[in-house]
Image (cartoon, rainbow, N blue to C red; front, side, top):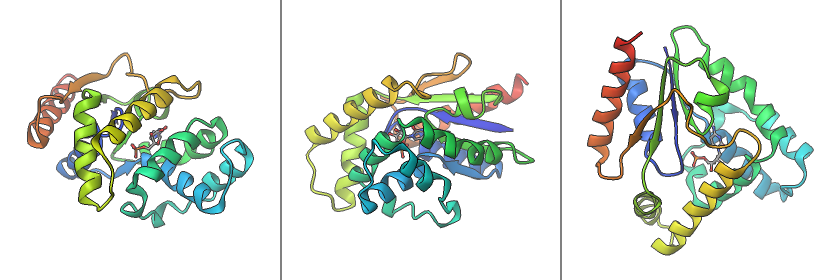
Length: 209
Ligand code: C5P
């Protein structure tokens, strides 16, 4: 069973995906980490976002087993990730790896922006997790402050809006809800409520198969 979880930044899709993977005993891939790793390497090496060939080279050479999720979660890396993710050659270089992960025997849970539309369009379970920009900014602000980053709520909201616009407006695999995805708007829900709602959607999709 492939479970595809998509949604904008700080929607809580990662938490849901991790819990679904644990619940059903499936492997999980946070595909945002791939783009974050490319963004972080580009920052470190001073590679320009216009240099598609160099960025694709970084993407093709990623050691997926060695990604440091904690180190890649900063706001600056998220911004760099969203820039390199708009480069078609980067997306192409990361495509097969994600498709192979999705198609492994027994299934998998993947979360990102284009899982239900591009990576696994045939996934039997697709959830589009979303919330208002204000709710997502408040969550991301709490998370960043908890990590020791000195950032204001207004800055985080502006960053969320910028990333939404870039992720949704890009030509290559933009963030869009798959036509057959179930929407989970968790603006009014806490983490537990969001998890229960997601689980109910997956169980309903499983029962309908
Ligand atoms: O989900 P996360 O915030 O970690 O993703 C970082 C960035 O990577 C996103 O803003 C988006 O631009 C990009 N991304 C993507 N496609 C995915 C996952 C992430 O374009 N499947």
